Length: 205
Image 1: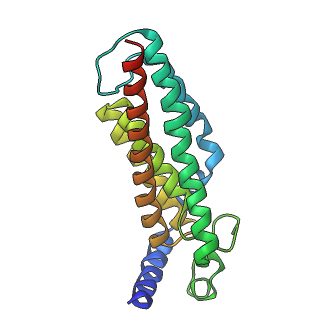
Image 2: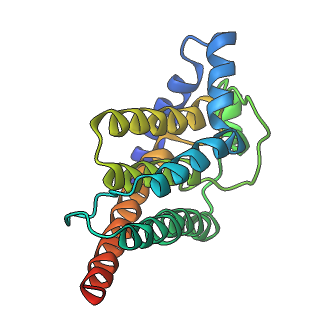
């Protein structure tokens, strides 16, 4: 069963990696795959969390002091915890399962896998990029509760995740599992923050 899934994963990954390559698409996917490129996005998002006095908490707006605490909790605990859980869990899985990245797999390379960036570490299950991206999308979309933002941030997360397959660093399965973990950790972090903020608001009434 698992062997058949692995072969299917290989075939789909090769198709996604090799299907209609072009210089423009290659450049776009490599760009999306570079994490430091997105640091300004993270910084801008954090800035707007602090600027938005009416951070959505499921409760009515009260004092600025309370909303400031909500912002701090969402940034430090919500966003920070999401990225920490996603990143460290991905590392634990990579070291524990030891599934080779496609760019280190002789079968994938012999069948024409294109590697568009540095190969990096040997193991890739599951994708930390996909996990972090979808975790960030989940927790921030729950904070802002704006349709335009939700659509935009999930499209960004999807493109970043797909780019990991396109550049030859991950199998489709790595990305899908990373996505599931990211969504769960993002939701979990938001719920923890909401409970904590509700507790603080009750205490300062």
